[in-house]
Image (cartoon, rainbow, N blue to C red):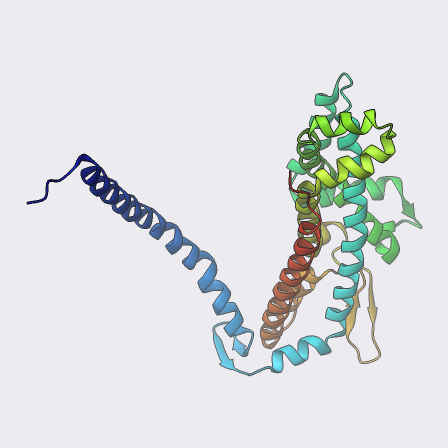
Length: 306
């Protein structure tokens, strides 16, 4: 009979341990997956189904095909909200990231009191969106009042009010991510650039920025998705006003963004409009997911492997 060696016993023990670990992993993952399925997968699939239904009452949904999607794309207010949100996303994306990177770069130069400034810049991110919207409403109404009417009731001022609000809230958060990226830049690369006679500007452009591309990817992703998903600040600051009435009698709220438009369609109109609102929500999800994936792929392709 062949003798069992110590190596064979150790191999058997390792296999047994591996199987036990795999069973434990499956046991721990099941509750998490169950919660994920109940809290996300089922509501999402249910929402997609309801986007193809018409509502007679709040609890009575009947299959309607693609009619809700046709009505959603015919809704002038939805199209306006899309372009308004897209413009807002581009402007806020540029301003927030440029200002956040500038602040982060200055705070990594090592001057005294930099930690205090980091805390001060980050604090607005801790304030809730609704509260933040009302705070800035009072600020704008207290400083800029035109003919005893809130200046936010003008479309252009409402737009820039939203931009200022979001810059004030998000710059500090993005600043922290950029600081982490700047501190991770290899010091020997910066020293080598100095030895080669590169100026601070060239070192920033050709050494620092390429090495913090992972931070730029994260910040662009967060800024872009937050801009498209903006809801509570839009509701509190302008509520979508002012509005214009179309020739067909429909109303377009000129500072209404996509999320608020979906909310107003679902709750502000009759019960039959809820299917259209659900179709808008599905379109909204596909839009944000597609734009985010394109942005992630574009920026990740420029990341430098250290």
